[in-house]
Amino acid sequence: MTPGDTKIVYVSREIERTLGIEPNPAYLVVSNKTTFGESIKKSYPDFVTLIESPKKELLGTTDLLQRPETSQIVAANSPAAIIVFKNTLRVESAAKSLNCKLLNPNSALSERVENKLSQVRWLGPLATKYLPPHVLKVARYITWKNSEPFIIQWGHGHTGDGTMLIRNPDELRALQEKFPDRMARLTTYISGPSFTVNVVVHADRILIGNPSYQITGLQPFTDGAFNTVGNDWELAGKFLSEDDRRYLSAMAEEIGLKLQTEGWRGFFGIDVVRDDVRGRLYLIEVNARQPASAVFESSLQEDRRAQGLKGITVFEAHLRALQGLPIDQDLIEIETGAQIIQRVTHNVQSMFDDVGDSLMKMGYKVIAYQNTDHNADLLRIQSAKGIMESHGSFNATGREIADVIKSSHFKIEV
Image (cartoon, rainbow, N blue to C red):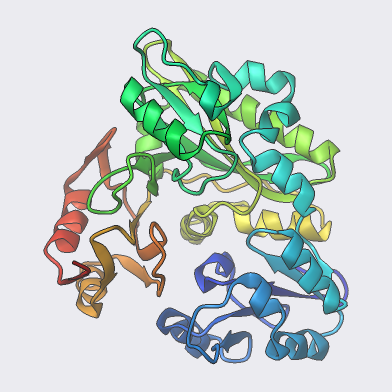
């Protein structure tokens, strides 16, 4: 996987983000000491380093890079190269101090692409071609027109928490009073199912992953209407027509080629919404980083490969693209599988271990997180089969998971 003697050191706040391939002598992992992290280290003791902060708090990627343990790992495995989940200026600075190459694309380019405001300019003609009708305005100058709801987005958001549906003048007025001078992107509200596709930019080609239906806003998993809580690859197969898939692939290809010409390598992701009234797909998000669903998509692809299918996973393609290694295989196609995430909500602050134990006994893979920030991941539940019956509605498998969550012993903050 690595050219010459170079080793990869993936440094991540959440160890789950690193597990697109198994840790091995050429692929080392540095992350926080957590219960889930310790279970991974037990399986790969020589290739996983877990760091515990003096205050017992989870360290961010920059903090992990600055720890002496990380410096020792890099020095002991020289020459080494670093990979992170999402690059930033602070990450770049910390990596530079280690005298170690950071393989992730430039953080300034990532910012231009992800920021909802600069993204419009960066996309250029593709913004008109693929985004819903939109305009940029300072909040105080936004006016209510035609009694039709619309979307307001700030420059930055995560999993939907920077996106607001404005349904009446009172909601607009309240937002303007709170953030009068903040620049926003106003977008026509499109009602319909959303989909995600993970894409890898290689120097020689654009590799487009398997579209998944985006599970959004379902309780008890989140208390935000636009918060993403999971992916269902099986439902995407039922929803998207051949024409939809061709259009989605063309969109991903064009955006990927634009990134490629600017030096981008490795993962990015796009989110789209299907307007069933107008009968077309619209671009709603470009994620210039490793998408959160990429590791599980790779796991599903590995299962298919074990059944005899040829090809590589999206994570393998990501690593090869970052390292400048050739890719002479196509991505493995998958037909089913789903995951859903219980997020930290206003009521649900944490969960007892018996919830995960119950779900694992039922055959699901469960990853527990030790997060406390609102909307952060709390519990990730993964299924080999789809969990959605239709847009916004669980099938029997999904209802089974939701029932366990609803009946569990929540630690509720009153």
